[in-house]
Image (cartoon, rainbow, N blue to C red; front, side, top):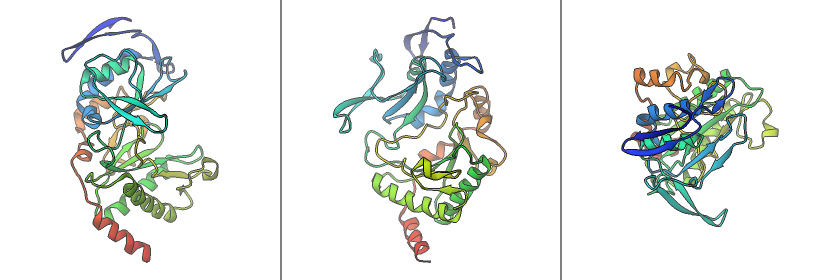
Length: 306
């Protein structure tokens, strides 16, 4: 690719621009490399984005420049990229969310310097019923990744004791994300209440290193077990999304038994594709392993009375 190029992907033709623009100054990674990554990752990431309203974080002048969240579809969106109109009571307007259905859409968005991909937890045909319970383990400036691992393991043990499967990925930053796929018959409120109980139990058993305190000022050096992302319209960075950090790390699924053997920084736009080819798509079960919460909720009640 030159600085300007005409792309032809999956029968879609569109222009790419400023391909030599440096988006990661420390690493000298360009926009061209971001586009190439998303084109290569498309077979793995698209299934996690399809039929979901998308929010992007754009960095037109690189990760050290100004960034902005984009909910409304970018201007000059090609007519072959579908959108989903949804009224927002917060802003009292219709927001046209971009939908990602094909490889070319990812490439077009990467050309707009959309580095991060944030899908809703529910699909557009069941907006009020999320497909997952999610936990975001968010370390403070003074907490350690070793303690993040401890919290993740304890959370997984609790979920397993409740008869639930959980799936793990790096956030692509300094934390971890844990997903519990569920039958999408529960409201966001029901999911959030359930997640709150789980997070509170874990925080109470690891009170020296974790918290569910919302105030950053009051968390101190503890890891925040964020269950509040289980809300309508809230998003987590998608699996296989790039993050605006040195090295261009990628949110990557892990096997539970490799958690202590790797760090989030190990997985970047330069290393993730070989791993995917070797290990396969470890996060695929998140889309199919739909679980009921009834038995787990009953077990939680008994734990609360002990």
